[in-house]
Length: 252
Image (cartoon, rainbow, N blue to C red):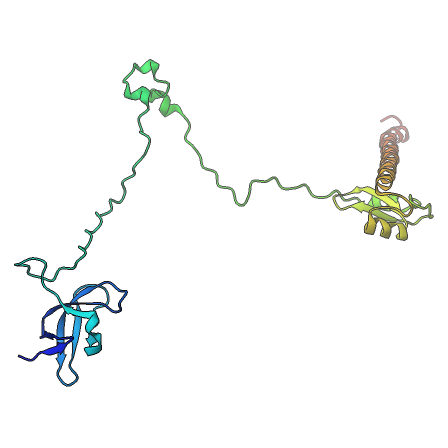
């Protein structure tokens, strides 16, 4: 029978061997698959594992190859030095394991029904309204109100002199982006200074803020009073028209 000698050990086909890929790797099991009598090499097929590709061993690989004897007499297959761990138990799908019991301690004690605060008669349970799930698109934050716009009030403010330096009208209505009613009359140089530095020339930020608030309040009060007077005049004209018609018609 053909055999190959490596490291003083004789090997034939189907011999059980153990090998390792390097000096630091653990030993692995396999068997001799084929012999090459020309160069004195042999081919080993791994016994288990994902990579079952055969490996060739030569004389210089004698330190990484040696015969392997079964661990006990009567063994029918090659056994590894480290036993293969058993497979994990099959997973049971749909089983929910709770750390807290579903039954409250009060119910577990089997107390009278009147003493159970969680007890609800079946008649009352059927009378309860069903829950209704409402789905809202986006976030639940309230929608901000649109800014207050009044072209008439802006024209009224532009007709006032500059509140910073007294330059005569027309002025620019320097206003807040949230409302046209928070406007103040400023000339172009003062408006640029307030936009850039938040202060009028020769004034601090606090003094500028106080002056603008004072002008805003005064303009709003005057404008509101003028609107009330116009409304009263319109009401008087509407009331006088039916009276004139009655006089012209002879009281009919």
